[in-house]
Image (cartoon, rainbow, N blue to C red; front, side, top):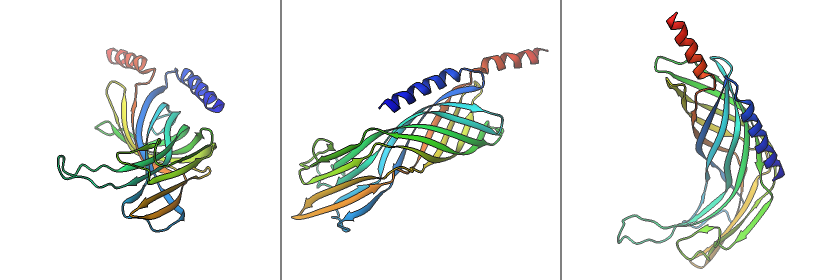
Length: 260
């Protein structure tokens, strides 16, 4: 936790430094999914059991520096989650709301703090003030203290039925890693200085994999599976960048030039 506090303070200092005229601040939100792999236990599962790819949201508070019309640099502080999710499909009634299914879900999740350092190439704005960009960089990835969770489907489970037959465990190790990240997207610039962008993100986690187990009994048969997740994921981000700190000064200079 001390490392995380130090990182937060460093980002605050970064924000203070970014008050020069060439920086702009932004907010990024999005989501991603990570693949889960079978590593042991029974290779065959009941038809009602589903090992879902783990999906999580993400929010970043970022700073961006546009070097020129072709290149930009970006960094900040991001928050997301990693983990596992298992689902048992339940019987449901056709009376009332047709097709309203109620499933039993067991979800293990761990918060993750990230500090990205990204560089990107961007195309010139076209006649519609739209550009495309592609970039790569590294992300400092911080997972909290090691956690070993074991339960029988109660407590951490989001349940709508008796979940005593669904249980599992998850092992998360405390670690810091330097992960490659790739991004590509499209961006719209507005007349008042702000920008809105939509981007695809691919994140390759280089740290230790996370592991989990799931066990359940259906129709008198007991099932047991072991899984791992590398923590790598693909997803998307929607970003809004506020006008840079020198936008008003540049606007005044432009108006003075026009008056001359």
